[in-house]
Amino acid sequence: MSKKSVKRRTIIDLQAMKASGEKIAVLTAYDYPFARIMDQAGIDVVLVGDSAGSVVAGYDTTLPVTMEEMLYHTRAVARSVSQALVVADMPFLSYQVDLVEARRNAGRLIKDGGAQAIKLEGGVNVAETIRAIVAMDIPVVGHIGLTPQSVHRMGGYRVQGREEAQAKQLLADARAVADAGACAVVLEGIPAKLASEISSLLSIPTIGIGAGVDCDGQVLVIHDILGLCEKYSPKFVKRYADVSGTIRQGIDDYIREVKDGSFPGPEHSF
Ligand code: KIV
Image (cartoon, rainbow, N blue to C red; front, side, top):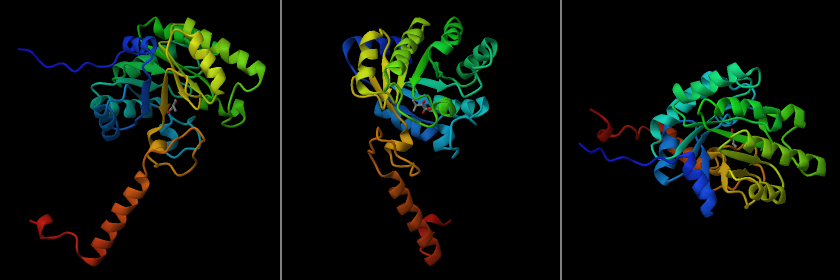
């Protein structure tokens, strides 16, 4: 009996895409319906980002997000995605304290969450952690530059690497993450020229967000590109749809029809 198998993207495919020059398209998702739509549309990677804390839970930062919340979102996404690679974010305090905790939490996102890779923030300072998780055969995506979990050290969400010393540090971070065995690295909020340099330097794919066009791929938050997040809109976001407007219209129509008695009609009644 042959079962038609759907080929899922793997970290090997991402590497091949970098080699061939095919750009890698990544979006965040936090639930079943959004993840299903982007998977069917052919997205390469679905990132279950800890940005869930901001765009789903309404926190000001990603810092309050817990492992349990990430597992919940990851399970919902993993249930609906069959073709894209699912990468789950490790939330703040799930990998910084010690290597044992980091390894256990990374493992939980794979075993209980159903992700195929995890992502964590940091450069030289997390190289040992990346190495320890990779040694468990768990693919790790790095994340350097504007790392939202370091908001208090950075003094806000600022572009990183504009000054020479910072740029040098970012180059060192990129090398450290790649040398530690990461399968890809997110470059967030850094000058396009520096991101281009890092992308040429590294043999692993770079995924940019606010890092210019020369990265090997791009990632954006789904709520941002669909116009679902009205709180703020960074310069690097391009809005591809006005879903808030569509939702508002539908809700307005529903309220009106309930109030004037035109819903439910006979076709909705038993
Ligand atoms: O949490 C997230 O969504 C992210 C991406 C924006 C890179 O880390």
